[in-house]
Length: 155
Image (cartoon, rainbow, N blue to C red; front, side, top):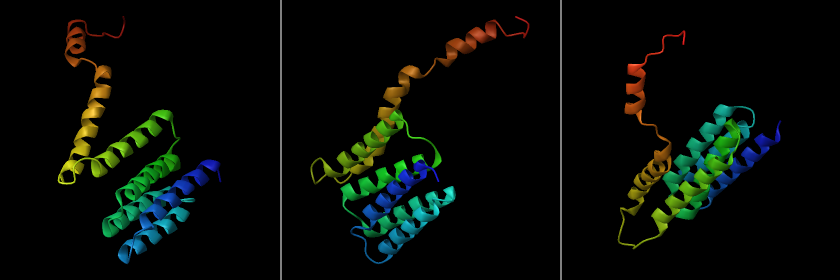
């Protein structure tokens, strides 16, 4: 086994442990199932996805503290990335950045604003569009130039 599998398994165990901290009853059972799926994920990649889905169930059933849910989510994303690909700097920045946005949305602000967590996905999409906007190409200009001078294959 490669070291990448062991590092990803470490994130998987952290993901399941963070979800199990305040869990009771069905939430604890789902967190335990996630731990078993993390072990199976050492040999089968599909089990890694099952582990993350079990943690999502554990979080939904136990309603943990926002920081524990954020830690579990960050660990789940790192677990899947490391299990299926290689971790890069932009991936790490994205994982930590979106986790930060989620934590701020759930913990900061006045306590009377219960709809603030609903704005986090919108803020994430707007931030994504602002950051990738300069890289988007203008389709109209290039399409018009191609229509005027079609490629004939012998040029």
